[in-house]
Image (tube, rainbow, N blue to C red):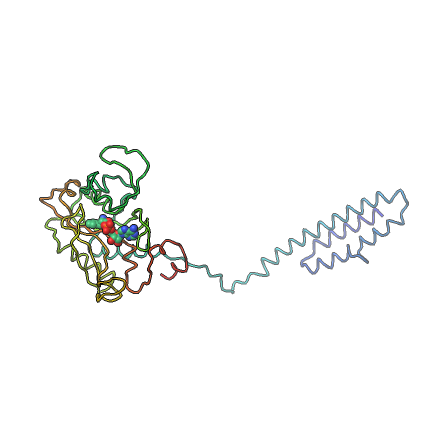
Length: 344
Ligand code: FA5
């Protein structure tokens, strides 16, 4: 019996090495382990007819051969299956799986468009800190600590002790005007700055977001006057909103410009005739004015030699007012709802 079992194992090893397919493997499985006439199954049936003292020893050997055969079958099966997958299922002529391609958020698209429009008339992009000192956001802009105009910016304050008296408290910048004196401090004249960045205020409703973007133009040169300001704004409005849109400068008050204006554009819905959205045909979009002499002085520029203009706009509001966009809630831009975002 011992010789028979060893012979079965030897022949099996030779045969399994030659197996090339799962179908051949199944035939071999039947040949050796088949229930009715498998070579090993039949040998095991013969154990009963051995001498009593031989049975345990031969039984153990038969079991070892069975475990060996079963293990080899499993190993070969796995190997053949993975070969099948590699060679069988890969068809290089089939079209690949198309991956979805993302796109820029509409606010990023707006920022690119705005930058490019101003680049054409010589403005250079700048970006100043969003976590800013009180000094640059207010004090240097002609708003001393107790001035009530500061309230208009509904500022977020950082819970941190001031590091020196001049810079004051740390805040999240409420407007891009905080870049004005920083730009002047570089000491390079003339200035044509386009500062676009995130700004923060404690406000939230359909037309206010606590985080929003502003773009701030600042021009400092010799003999700058209101016609330069008006021409620049008009150029931007026609490029960004369309040739048919008009602008209006309405007298206003900002501490850091004199004179100051609010900039209105003619409504894109009724084309200036008056409707539900605009009431009288005009929409307010920005603040602007000629740079106050005290701000020039804070930036170490002589107001007797130089003058300048500045304007600050909301990026989101401007984008929402572009003709053809029907978004009536600014907060939709930041809800990350792909059904909205993917339309732009
Ligand atoms: C200012 O922030 C001035 N710094 C603008 C300025 C710059 C005046 C330079 C003179 C010279 P105002 O607070 O009006 O002004 O904001 C300007 C624009 O930012 C608004 O017209 C609006 O378009 C946008 N804006 C203001 N608050 C929000 C808000 N919470 N959410 C979205 N947009 C806002």
